[in-house]
Figure 1 (cartoon, rainbow, N blue to C red):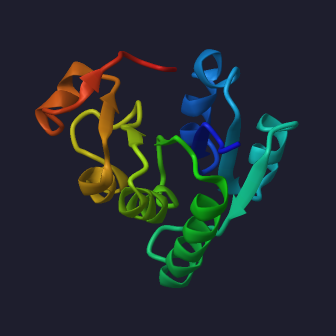
Figure 2 (figure 1 turned 135 degrees about the vertical axis):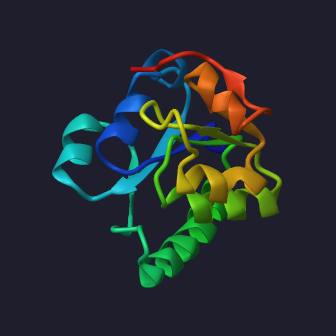
Length: 151
């Protein structure tokens, strides 16, 4: 059976935002892609996790490593949906998911109200559904669905 949801995240606030959606993802077969950090290990104890390469910001070797990881994980798991609130590790997964015809959902982060995030901009062309948490974010993502604050 294919994985229902692949949740892509970095540590810290990005992970915290996906954790607030536990009521939605807890009943689904899921796999997390996240860095191997103490924060992730603690907050995702008991979850299936594939460790991504970190850091991702302006780190070309890790971008390439995460692209290879994305190909491997998406081919093996064949998720029905890929969801992320960032950060950079989401980009190669969204690109590969789009190429494979897998729907993607990008959640713009809670604390960027006046400008879009770099990850949000890079994932944009590969995003099936964009979610924003503040009405002001609709100014730069007019196609997004406003859900309100997750945190």
